Length: 173
Image (tube, rainbow, N blue to C red):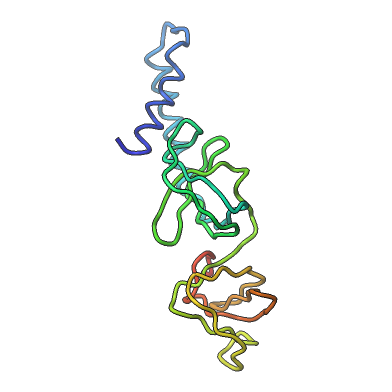
């Protein structure tokens, strides 16, 4: 059973103890439709990138502490794509495709990016004018500014511009 099926089954169980209304079939359909409308709309929101606050964050298979941990990320500031929200939980996706649920307290709105190519060249200006550093794959950088397909970042106290195609963790369109 997939994550959504487990979540949906749990959500339906919330209604087991409710008193029945004379028109309970109609009410059930309205609740059911409202639920799916809310879920559908949450998936239509714009892509939002966040980062992990802590150096040890559990990624779970569902939105709650009762769900098993599928991964544990051991570094702070890792960029994640937020793809859904439910109560106090966010479903996130890492650049390698790993997905799972994280408690909102573990999420930071500070934008970071990760180098996804073998290396990225950092330039002094938003053009290929004056290279100032070479950054290796999987290094995490702080985002300072966006300009077209160039992203100004900071890493190790050095500030400069990197082409957006060399990084993951920001919507630059």
